[in-house]
Image (cartoon, rainbow, N blue to C red):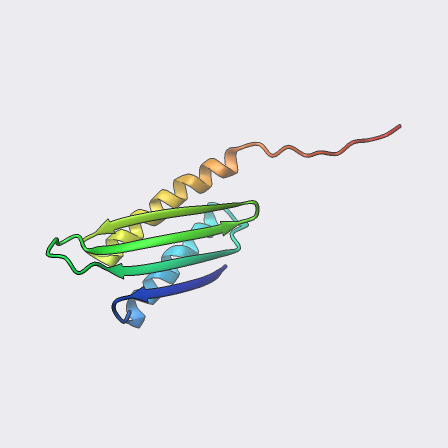
Length: 105
């Protein structure tokens, strides 16, 4: 899976980027046809403690999933967003796919 990570209003350290990579790699266990993912890490300049925002866009063939979470830490927000994506991917995998194959005699 191709991973694009962007940090808005701050510089992300390698420890955070490695956490994002390892957590998103686990999504392959639930759905193996993931093409790419875009992760946006944002910090709001407010006095509220929950000012870390994670926005994840997951590209799969024929569909795109978008999850946005706001928490106290980036790790907590990433974990929560990935849990939501896991549920969506399991639901997508269970849906029957219709094959259009016509046989002419």
